[in-house]
Length: 461
Image 1 (cartoon, one colour):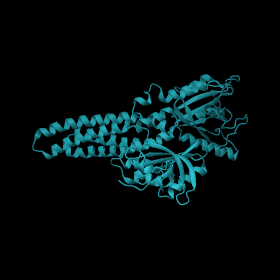
Image 2 (image 1 turned 180 degrees about the vertical axis):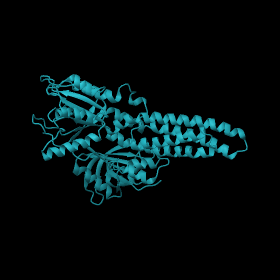
Image 3 (image 1 turned 90 degrees about the vertical axis):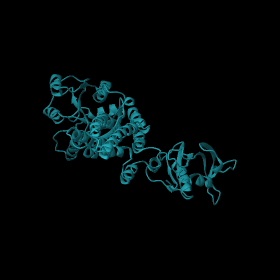
Image 4 (image 1 turned 30 degrees about the vertical axis):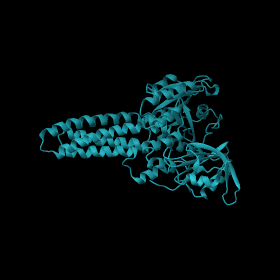
């Protein structure tokens, strides 16, 4: 498969020590050779693959020096895209890197589309679709666990398991074909059905096991939407600041200071939290505060975890009890704050309302109880679970949806076979399962989906 030569800035924009402009394609070396001058004057076309060279970029028409660079030369197919690749290391900074990119583009390269380098790696057979998606997961990883999951997927962990499942189904389909081609042999069907049941049962069980990791995998990939909830002035903003370890929210003794929701990402014991500090939920005549309260209720509806904050130095109110009713069916942890003040809250009543849910006492002013809260959050979602390196985690929403479809179709095949439906009819569900699993790794996926997936990537990847 032949493509034109593309180029893009592969490092974040802004000031820095080094920036990288990457080229990929059949003309990458020739384009670089036109603008690169080494002290020895030797052409890049004569240089060995996977070598790095010092020199200057010059404007070919005027011989004007544009930048001092280190240039990496890598010949395909032993590159990320399986094409010839040039990486130009120049000085970091907006002016420097843009001058280099402009020089490359005016001498034959085309500006890459978002994710086009990774898309070429997929189209050239370097990686499959699940590995390509893991590249972006790796870039966006917010914790070590999330990064380990992405690395495992990039290494082909999920791909190999999906490949094994598809191979088992393929063997089953081959057995069914024998039954269809040689119907005169009565014992063929007797041999086919047991094999079909065995293989499809194994595939179903493996899919179920994969789906059991999906909730944790999705948390690792996307973060846990965590809403800090409570009446005004119980310490919600102080809790956000303590977890983030930075003064992101204004903290005062005046009730209703937080008028809008504040969002921050934080890593809590390997669990990525998307923290949402809400306006205190109460009845109010203040128009602005009322809007904040309504936004708090909206955030609550999409939350994975609630941190319900109560005031140790206040008696439990009707509003507090209503909040318990509101979040009754959700995962939540009760945070009883301000233990540095005299106790007025009825902790026995709090325990009665919380039931099986964890209660943590804190004095955020004195930085007490935060460690216990972090441990409670981690334990709620990962206690007793195998570490990320020991399981094939499914974290991608597209993969999860396809696995649910594959489970449904393979279970249809099993039910039909057990009901005595002719194997050529059962074959339809088995084939559909094989196709659905192929969509995960890109074997049976449509071009429109491929384009849509890669359009979500950053420009230089």
